[in-house]
Image 1 (tube, rainbow, N blue to C red):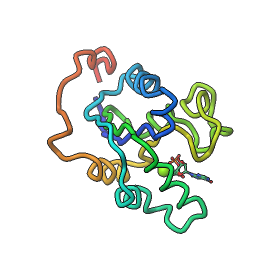
Image 2 (cartoon, rainbow, N blue to C red):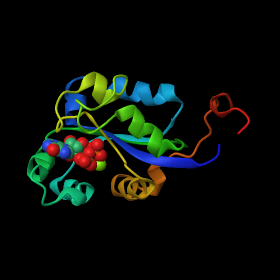
Image 3 (cartoon, rainbow, N blue to C red):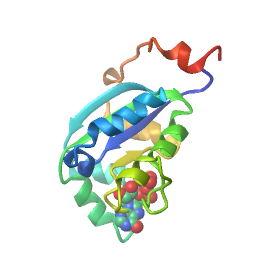
Image 4 (cartoon, rainbow, N blue to C red):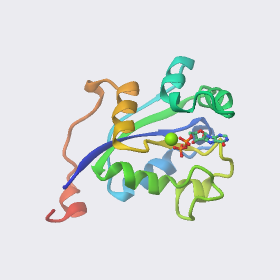
Length: 154
Ligand code: IDP
Ligand code: MG
């Protein structure tokens, strides 16, 4: 594997309530990415403010914080070659009207706010977000037996 990356992916409260947890996980799994951490949790106001700090001051910020804290989420870390970029492609554009068919948001969401899934937008964001949600011990280091078939001789 050339550039092993870890990215933070979260199924938001609408994804849990709509019964799409398995669907989202399945799409990432089938791609060949490796699940290295996962937990269900309810996000506190404080954690929401840290996670979405870059959006503070925007007109949708208050509704974003109340949405993300409104019910359980499934927080995950996925690993693989170019995992940050690949998972953003699988998730699709922020606005489901601009998300391509075949993406999670393109296929399964309508609302810009309630768009089912979060995915880190860069390696730096991924590192920051993983640290916010997981301790080092919660990141499971293991070898996926299918790896040589996913990556070939790389
Ligand atoms: P991203 O989730 O695709 O990275 P960001 O621009 O980082 O998109 O925005 C974070 C989240 O804030 C979005 O996923 C969405 O839930 C919400 N959001 C972004 N822009 C809007 C908006 O214009 N109206 C309402 N909610 C928004
Ligand atoms: Mg973002």
